[in-house]
Length: 198
Image 1 (cartoon, rainbow, N blue to C red):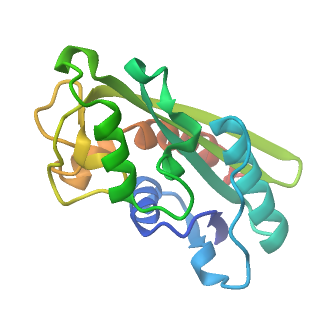
Image 2: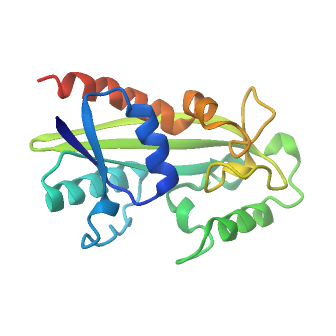
């Protein structure tokens, strides 16, 4: 069976991606299995740049076709911030709580109708002589208090359009039908499906 390496140690992300790709005829691995591989510094200026960089570095380190993604929360009122720095919005070595706290502070007093946001995800796949990317977007709004215990990152603050629950309140099966990551990875899955049949 052919192998695919996920260029992440984020267990929430691994779980979501494995669920999305579960019926592909491939063996899925992730970099947690390779403790000697250092963290990839995400210093590119775009989500696309970071996703491709991560996939390339992990492919070069393992020799296994690799897939990575980079995701940003883009809040229209904040000029599409935090965007590419979503994971380190509150600074270096911060956690989800710190980032959520900063976002709430930035949006303090902003009325609900102006709290429109979108999650944008770029998935990248790299193999010898191959480099592919796909994009997924999920529109919604940022609420003013944390709700839910599922998911990760900004999920407790984000209600996708057409729903009353945050990503952190929705079951994973529902999130994986509507999320930005689901859209990007389902597009990638279609590409990989034909690629791994070769």
